[in-house]
Length: 299
Image 1 (cartoon, helix red, strand yellow):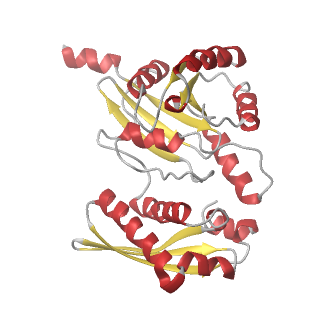
Image 2 (cartoon, one colour):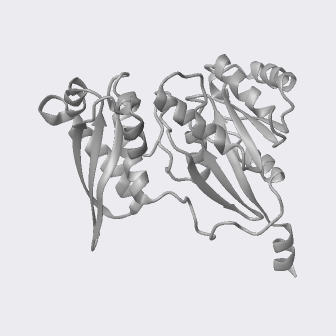
């Protein structure tokens, strides 16, 4: 009888996490899952693809879609990235809008709110980084955003520390419909290890190189072979110009070695298998402005 009641009350559904660049979307997803599948850095537009993560709860299965930051842009690459983010909100049961209270992006917020008014999907507002503002200001922001849009719920959180994440999940659960789980019980993501490995290499380039480099790089996995207790990965870091190749490689190859060591640690942690990672740097001139190259690299 208990199992039957559990089955009748079970909920499952899709939740899109949206927001401006650097709002903390990927940090939130990784914290909820308890494992890193979505890359993060302090530089905007780290996430370029829709990343799916699944969390199993006693009475629900929630499927999250981590999306790229939505912002005003003119570049071909960023237009494609923003389009992916906007498309992600069309077929979900609810939306979590994340806003960074410590560094607000007013222009991006206007674009997002305008988009949200076009559909009737429930929207939960997650006011992120409450640890970086005065406690007395939290109520002010709740009241402010209540007047801007008819949010289903407003939850102040700190994604990095996990503050009020259980409360956020409780409100999210209320927004998804009754129904059976949509993925097998032990599913964490639908992204392949090969894809995540490429993302982890790209994350290290974002973290370790100067501001101009990350937006001119793409990473492709040219080979991903499993041999007994070893995975051999050949990854290529594509840059726009010859000068950038030297920066990514670094003096005596030190930068590329640093990128490789740190990426290998993350990939090894994810797979639970020993990793042999070989990195190459290739100049693909103006790839971020070339339609053919963008398609080739998955954008």
